[in-house]
Image (cartoon, rainbow, N blue to C red; front, side, top):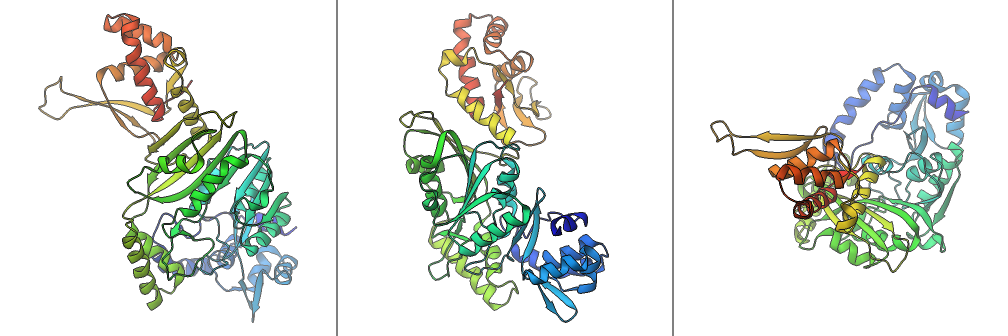
Length: 471
């Protein structure tokens, strides 16, 4: 089987040109150097990387040595590679995500290009449970990466896309990987026909489109960039089962209205819990430089014009700062039930489902009444460090206390009062809130009724910031 032949070479996922995190133009300059190194690499994996990741010409004989003449012939017959004399060139990019083989397009800015999985895809897969039960939908699937990995993890996966080329590539990738994915064509939720899901994942296009710029399906999210993401978020509650979770990853312009307020207005006041985690985004200058290189990968005259066009559009739209945001929506048991809402600046987005799940659990505790929270179990987030600092020569009683994390987590650092540090220390040795309240009262030589509001208020704030989590 071709898939087994490919796997046997050791060829694995190499992150594509990272659209979201670096300047594409700088990466383009490195490609000739990478091709040269891969041309010297005599391994089978090196031959495939040159052919499928860096659009290099590879001798037919070298491909035969890597995967065999019969597999190479299949690739030619299927139209995946093309012959140019004695060389082969790939007509598709091939990447691997968790053992799933993904055929997709090169990331040029053609209107129907099917974008390869990039860093956003990796982030989205990270916050998806390793074992999935129930139905899952991938909105705007592209080449099908998220839906295919979800199917491999056990979900009944559905994928939608408005781009016919993306739909066909996803169907091909599902068949190639022998995974069952129900692939439907249409705009966002239109193809779902009233179906409901336990899980919804989406990474909608979020690049701001200048008025005179041809729309690119995988790239542009509207004039501001986040219009399409807002449509996905607004429609998510209607397709979630009670208790269902939606995770939408996108960039959002920073404006006068907080993002979580905009999201709550879009999805309505009841029926859902909502968390918007906002990490630092890319500066508009870097966006303009990077996205222009998609329009002209040669970095020629069209590139300079495109960079100016993007930058002027962002300036005209008043976009001087963006966040890289993860919106998490969870359906409440009843549609008329009010849920909690929070927006939180974070040093980085969650890197796995367990981290996100513990944060959501902490928010559930924070939403409890004082009496309920006072008898809960709470502990410091793993990796927490309590620090005490003072400047040289400063009075020893004048110190700065703070919470830090090693390694960094989604929870931001926070300064502490002496009382706050004491409460965290107590929770680290006894997770029961009622015990912490009693011990803190004894240490302060006050009654439990006197210290209880202080402890509960402090813990509630720390839970909302992700500093404390359910025990």
